Image (cartoon, rainbow, N blue to C red; front, top):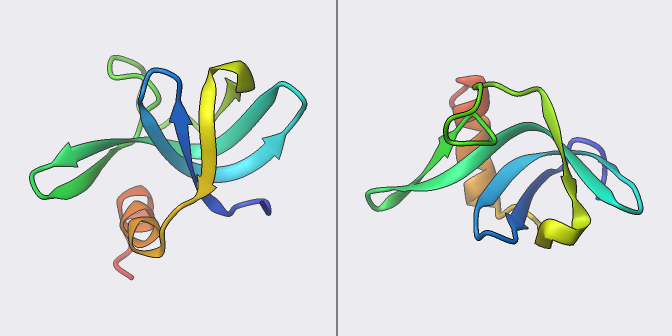
Length: 91
């Protein structure tokens, strides 16, 4: 992964996060501009937070790798929607 690649992180509790890859260490993965992925009818919605009751618009967050099931590059169509949701730009 390269810095600023849009990635999907699946946490051990089943929550999916999409954000920009920032850093990986032996114990953590850090993503910037993280959003929780949530179903929105027949589409995906992006909540600009890392916890349902947490402060919105967190700049970046580090996940403990022991609580991460997988990390993959985000699908192109999902990345487009994420970028639209996170920036307000229509691509």
